[in-house]
Image (cartoon, rainbow, N blue to C red; front, top):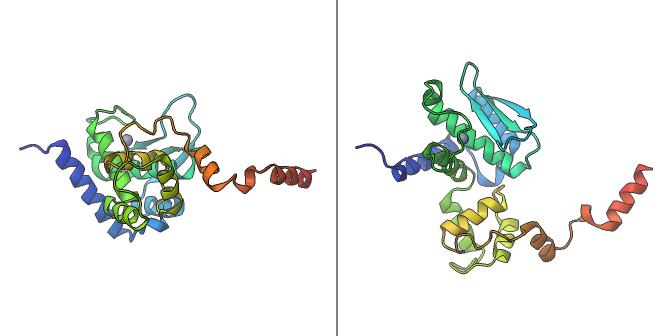
Length: 213
Ligand SMILES: [Zn+2]
């Protein structure tokens, strides 16, 4: 019997956990330096680029010396996610890409190869079970969470993940309704809750300008 998508995603989650063990990955220590060192061990080159008009964050090239092109200007959290997504292509899809079965950059939402890479990256960066434990430890309600819960959780959780990442997880864990946070401006809400970050305060900007002159 061929593998169902659900079985495929389970297998990728297991692979993500195995790779974490292999590289002794701890969630709180995941950063770009660690990801770059994994790329180095795997012999995959990273090429930074500035995409012009195309909505692709990263792309894997299997030919010859494998390499990944990644949008230089991505913030750290989505950059880490994109780089781990591409590692799944390297570990799982390389032969299929070389055979032309799967095309790089085929970001079709119905494409289970791509969804699989998202599942893999999410599990690699912040395993489900770890997040569930953290949610419980931080006292996040098991249902009917508010955007404020997500903001507070993000600031307390050890994983380098974006609001987009956390919203998807809160949805899957049924702590919020799917789509309920679509219009939430999390960065704004974050400033309302925690105050304006130092670098954005008028006094800081004034001082910085003074120093420059
Ligand atoms: Zn992909």
